[in-house]
Length: 207
Image 1 (cartoon, rainbow, N blue to C red):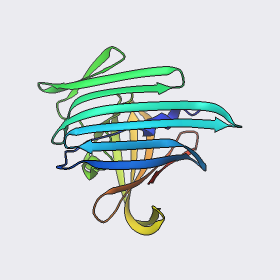
Image 2: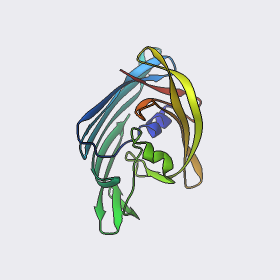
Image 3: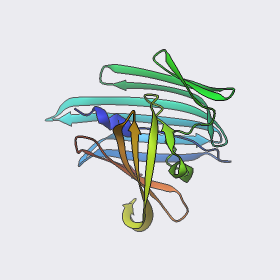
C-alpha cells in the first residue's frame, strides 16, 4: 500500500569545500513517519532514512534506507545503497568504469553513460538533466522539470518566497515520480513534497 513512498527517497551529489548537513522530518499527510538526513563532506555523501507508518496504532509499513556515494565533480563515481522495505531487501552498487557507469542491483548489472547524476536535490544542476539515477532501485528515469517561479512557503516556521520546481520521472514509459522542490534566494534546497500514485502526500520539513 505504501510502497511508492520509497520512490521519493532518492539522492545525491556535488562536491563542496566544507561539510554540509540537511535534517528533515518526514510526514505522510498529517502523520510524522520518520526522518531523513544527508551529510555531504567534499566528495562523499551519506544519506540515512528511517520511516514507520502506523494505521490504527499498528505498524503498517517500515522503511530503512542508507546510501553512500562518491563524486568526481558532477559525475557519480561510486555508489553503495542498502534498503529494507518491510521484508524486501535491495542492494545497489555502482562504479565508473571507463566510458560507462556500471550499476548492479541484487546481482544484476546494467551499463549507463559515464557521467550520471542521482537525485541531488541540493544541487540545482539536476533541474537541467534529462535522466537521473534512483540509487535505491537502480532505475534510470527520464526527467521533465517545470519552473513555477517564486511561491510562498514556510521553512522552519518562517514565511518566505522560494523558487518552486515540479519534477516528474518516468521509467520504461510508466510514471514513477511526482516531486515538488523549493530553493531559497541563495539556491539552497529548503523543502520537498511528493504525491504517490495512491494520492498520499509526502512532505520533507527542514529542521
